[in-house]
Length: 166
Image 1 (tube, rainbow, N blue to C red):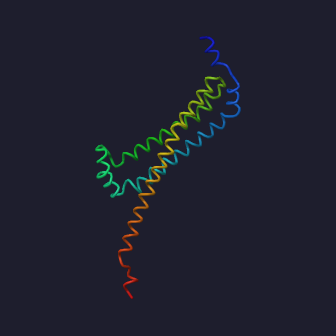
Image 2 (cartoon, rainbow, N blue to C red):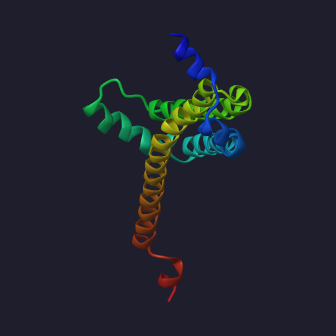
Image 3 (cartoon, rainbow, N blue to C red):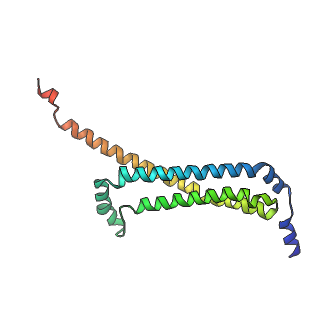
């Protein structure tokens, strides 16, 4: 047991490498990431609510089609879950950043691995969040494109006053 405690209390080459080369970069990277995710959360939630979720045809679609697959579905449920996921991404990224400057300063094996572990956990939440946001943005653009195509088709069916005046 004493050997195990001594092992984690010691410094090794990796601990020195982390302290000299990685700690500052990880701090700034995760601080930047938390700020980025916060701005994405703010922008995306507000814009999706205005452009998609408050549209009557989207709400009708969710209640009509979505309830076939999930009777408990709500109109704003997916937006709420996306907001929660982005919130946890922000929190974990910020925690990973803070861990680099608090626990990471101890320059011991255990503190190095705790600081790197928080960075790994934050990254493991960020990567799936990135793919989910990508899917949401694709759906958003498809929804907007479909509405635009419907408007364009409706305009082509209505004769314009310029063509009928001749």
